[in-house]
Image (cartoon, rainbow, N blue to C red; front, side, top):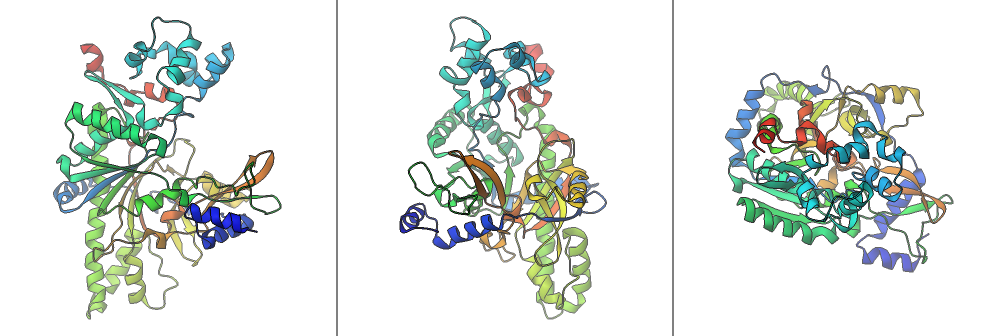
Length: 493
């Protein structure tokens, strides 16, 4: 199926023939569905923390003993965020001006002065003309927001100016770890905007004096994936070359795998609050971090106990703890000691979960894996065969939603870095139907970064309040309370 020319192209992009063959086989299989056993709930699978102060104090006491990094996927463009405004700009009509209620273009312009970019916009225009002219200035010739990443958009307003989403993540990190030098920030960005992020960082440092160590990486071409036509031959571009497409956020596992840190916080670029609300959200970041540290400490002690000659004195307590705290399933185990040592020495993630309010996206579930054991997983809708009534009912009965609020430990219990590729469920990929040059194609995305890419990690789900989940999916989300200054700011201005 692959020609010599195809193989040369793959080699130039860092994709091995073995990897390409695996991708084709997955696409031919055309079935990457998971088998849901039940949603994870507060009764089983989601921890409701009663003594929050214990874990917050654990983090504050222990974080200086660990190398900490904040990992932020930041390559996403703002096109979807400005979808309504783009539609209005292309065809100004009464319908696309008012439809959408809170999210309508009418609502955007009616509260234009509340957006953090309002002052910058005013400097781009000589007079207030009609709304279509203003939308063009916001989207293209003025601010250019339709064509840049979300991270570079002015999100929040302050007395001394505005902050981009990128800058807000730096301030959050600095307050999470009180000593600025004790947390690194890593952002994955698009190659064409890497220099823009670097220039923004220079301005932020000049303005704030923040001394955080910040670096950037890009999603590598070697993580691109193939696609197939209906006849199962490889899809090609207009020049007959093999079609290679970005492999989804699961491709960022390669970027995450390079980070040398003990504790890694993962959070999307658009999920943040105005700085006035950090006092409401930061305790829960510390809570997740403290729980992770507590788990690592206990796992390390268990590993020592079970590795010792006196393991029989500890094995029952270890088994009980791992089943209750980490969802271990030892029902198929023949050698309990060996299985505990294997089970416990893996990457760990503590994931915040918010109550389900109908947001689209994934959630926490118990899943039956290929080894016939039941594990906790974050599952997206596309991974479930909704044509099966039983699976649809289980997916729709989820009580909680995944806001992408993770804290991870990616080192072994003897302090060595894991190769995270060894813990991926390759079958948990995403396969979808698209159209390319007038033909139907099946498209492959790598197992999602917090889905199949972490399928074989130790997983703990923790309920956190809705205040911790404030994504900006559409422009007018920035008008919500959590993205606006508190009332004191408006009184002062």
